[in-house]
Image (cartoon, rainbow, N blue to C red; front, top):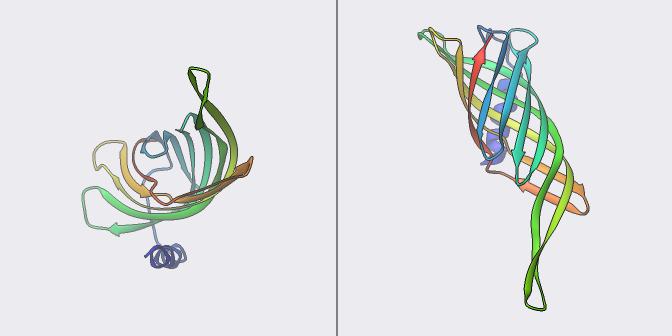
Length: 165
């Protein structure tokens, strides 16, 4: 299923069309990796998305190259499909395991610095009479880090609310 979704996204990313009515947007991303999101368009189709997010006691800085395509051309607002790719870097913290010494139980904390490859697919709706955009996206990633750390996250879904200007 993931292979077909990725293939569908790549095919749509190679098409040309007019996509959006705003130039920049700033807002909040609420999901597995919640944070602050900034979007800027290069032209009618392509742009980038920067996300400063918080997850598992750490922070991540994500950069995504995006491509936008209209879904419905004759509505009051505007529905867009978008897809893209990029990466993130950051660190996360978690409890390694419990160790019992004497009568006390200790949790060892582990800190990992990581670099990841991200893919994103989503739907965006621009509100017709307000400078707001609401979007729903799916952003899986594969992260490697130090020391000996690997994470595959196929369940990074989020809703974003952004102010356009």
